[in-house]
Image (cartoon, rainbow, N blue to C red; front, side, top):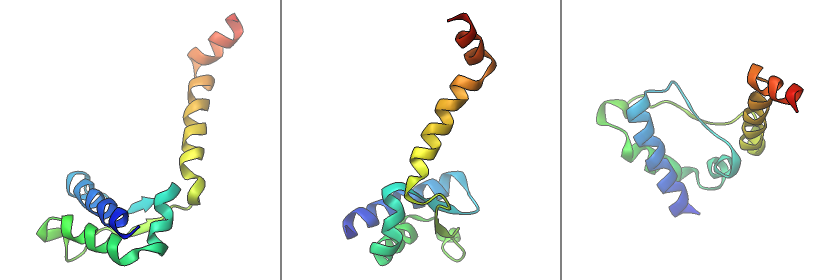
Length: 94
């Protein structure tokens, strides 16, 4: 678990370097790593950050949606396809 948390932290650090977010949120299975292996997650995250970001890195927070966040996002994406103008026209043509 610690190795997975460390690897995730390194990946998050790389994305923070590239995207410059104000915060990083974790959901799904990653959500539990904040509680299960916080030291390994933080160590990987900090190690991957560019030097100037290490003084004040964006906080890593659990998603407000909890472990069900990915499922909620997938459902939202599915409804986007169905409820767009094209999707509604396809339903009426069927």
